[in-house]
Amino acid sequence: MSDLANRTLTIEKTFDAPVKLVWDAWTKSEHILKWWAPNGMDIKVIEHDFKVGGKWKYAMPMPDGNEFISEGIYKEIVEYKKIITSADFRPMTQDVELQTYFEEDGEKTKFTFSVIHSTPKYCKQQKEMGFYNGWGSAFERLEKVLESLQ
Image (cartoon, rainbow, N blue to C red):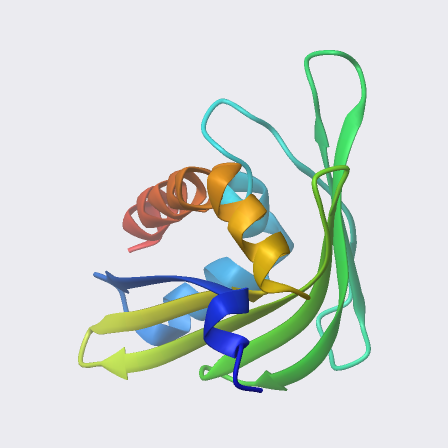
C-alpha cells in the first residue's frame, strides 16, 4: 500500500545484548512483567500463548482503579528474527499491528519496532498522543532488564 509509510510509527534501537537475550526479554512473561509498561507502572500478564494464533493479554492497573488492557493475537513468528501481532491497547489504541524485528549484530541486537495504523489520520493522532515517549520509556526499561540479565 502506498500510504503504509503514513500509517506507520517506528522506533529503531541497538541493544547491547545478544539477540537471544533480547528475544527472551520480549517473549517470556517473567521478563515482560519488568518492562512492558511505562516507568512507574506495573503490569500483570493475564495470558501469554507465544505461538502463531496464540493470544496475549496484559493489564496495567491505573491510579483511578481501572485497568489499561493490551492484547492481541500472534500472526507470524520467526525465531530470533521477527514477531508480527495484532494489538489493542484499550482504551487508547485499537486495531493496530505490531511488527518487531530482531537483527543479530555480533553481541548486539538491532531492533526495529513498528506500529501500523488503519489510517494516516489515526497514525498522526497516536504520534501526537505520545507514542514515542510511551514506547521509548518502555524500551528504556527493557534496556535495564537486558543489563540485569547479562
